[in-house]
Amino acid sequence: MDISPNTILIIILVIVSISFIFDQILDYINLKSQRSDIPGEIAGFYEKNKYLKSLEYHTELTRFSFLTSTFSFLLSAAMLLFGGFGWLDNLLHAYIQNGIMLALAFFGILMIASDILTIPFQWYSTFVIEEKYGFNKTTVKTFIFDKLKGYLLSAVVGGALLSALIYLVQSIGPNFWIWFSLLAAGFMLIVNMFYTSLILPLFNTLTPLQDGELKKAIEAFSRSVNFPLDNIMVIDGSKRSKKANAFFSGIGRKKKIVLYDTLIANHTTEELVAVLAHEVGHFKKKHIIWGYILSVIQIVFTLFVLSLMIFNENVSLALGAQQFGIHLNLLAFGILFSPISAVTGIIMNLYSRKNEFEADAYARQTFDGGALSNALKRLSVDSLSNLYPHPWYVFFHYSHPPLLKRLEALEHS
Ligand SMILES: [Zn+2]
Image (cartoon, rainbow, N blue to C red; front, side):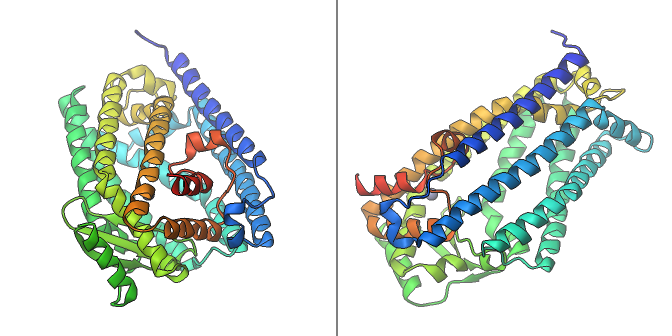
């Protein structure tokens, strides 16, 4: 089947437009489902004023997101309609012949240009909105250094992966997807294993948790459930935001837990152990390993579909180019594949929400459901999270169940 460049361009524009409109509708109904009453379960944790402030926060976030997504939608639509991507490709062709260098320059320029264009939005979000609601702790210096380090990291990691992909496509042909799948799976494993020791320290400072009541309690719990805890680290999340978090790292035998200093500051020892018990639950129920397997399956499938159209010249021409280019087809594929990745995204979210319930149940069985409930309530209140998200919004976007559903499950199981 041979689809003309014009038809391909129309399909791309339709996908971009529908996904934009769809997102705006979801945002809108989610905003409309806000309610001004505080649910009884967490009334004790919330002052009326603070709750009303959380509603304002969400309204402001939604409006701002409408602004930013409209801006990027118009920008991509214009680039597509006026053949901007083809124009850039042509320009680069005058200086660069090598396919790998061409792809690196092409994506490098597009990424830097789009990031520079959206800096005002990122700035406003951090220093105006988050600041106004008392979350922001980022200094201008941190903001700038984060940007530079982010650029460096994507240049090194993204550049290496992109070069490998182009090299394999050029040298193996349509079967490149088998080899690149292996490479990607290995890469994900390495990132998973070394995330806390290599990547995180670029942006944050990690220190071992000091001896004391909390450390004793965590170690006692780990022993009681026979969990091979290797290390408890504290990360200075407070460098950027007052919002709190905790996570595990390590796919092998030795597990590392990372607690945000902001989490430790606002929770009791029981609550913190309950949060840890929830995370241990993810390990015990094999969610981590299945999450990895599912991601690998997703990557293999994506690369296979990519292999069906990577050599189609009409795809490059659809972007306004005068000749075929692997990088052009890659870019177009990113859009053409997005309806399919939206569907796999929904499936992954469904799976993730199921896992959250299971990890909560694990914490209730092995430690204390009440302590976990309190921790979840406090986390939710402190981050002004949305208590009444619209069910459709949850279905499409939430990787965790809404607070009230989790509390209900913790009480009635
Ligand atoms: Zn979880």
